[in-house]
Image 1: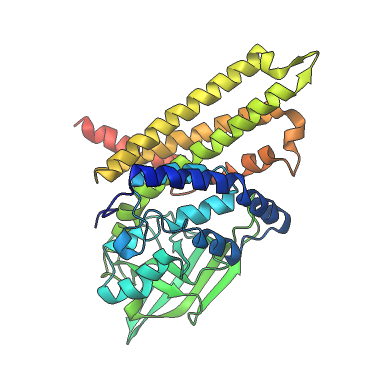
Image 2 (image 1 turned 180 degrees about the horizontal axis):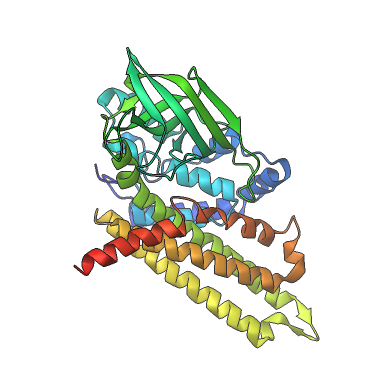
Length: 385
């Protein structure tokens, strides 16, 4: 199924962009401050974003979405990335987690899971990562069919929004299988018997996002919650979802880096040392020039990947390139921004301090830099044959 049936026209889209920009620069600032003060980003934040129509931007209109093209959606997530890290992740997850469902759900599951998920009536979270394995074909969590249920055994951890999710879109394998064979996708309800949810310690950044450690000991899940058939689990997770999600994460790096640059420019103009503003010092001008160029290069990689996704020709290589470069760019830009701010930027309560912490999370989302390099190298080597 394509990403969209009917693309929002340009006039409507520009109105949406203006609306989102005003929302990010206005009401979301107070929400961001509250999250930092309380350490909580609960369902009320999801409800606010849902009421504004921001949780179903990229999904097809017939399923309850707003039908943005992927390229259009990237421009919107870039704006949300300038706000709080947890808010950005809500928008990112909600506008992408429906993708694995498209090739798997039955007609009944479309009504029971997919449409409520897109409409924001259900919260589901991607549940792949395990403590004792990589996030791929070596997953250890197993299932076996017993009557009308699957019994699930294993562990999952670092599961974002595990504190409030209604369902866990969990990937596992049939007992006795290996590799992609026998991998399954299950919708595990929060109250499944045998599922224990323990919250992990607060993360360095992205304050308010509850990360869960799941323990599954013969956890009983109705067989009708199996999406697709055994053997399709990882294909749906890694093929239909991961490429677009990596590009989305890459574009959030662009948005956050752009905000860091804005703050650094403002600081450089205001801060006076030895009789002149920092902005008049050549080393600071060099930093700013490098930051702006780095951001633009990452943005163009993301735009190109987005256009490929719109044409249904996005490859794993191009998605990984966008993420690899953008994550490295964000680190370089935020490092320089903090140096321009000086010691005062290191203290809690300043926006640049929060951005610096939040900017480290994308290192781990949808695969590390090392994972992206393996994927890119594989494609490069195949081209050389």
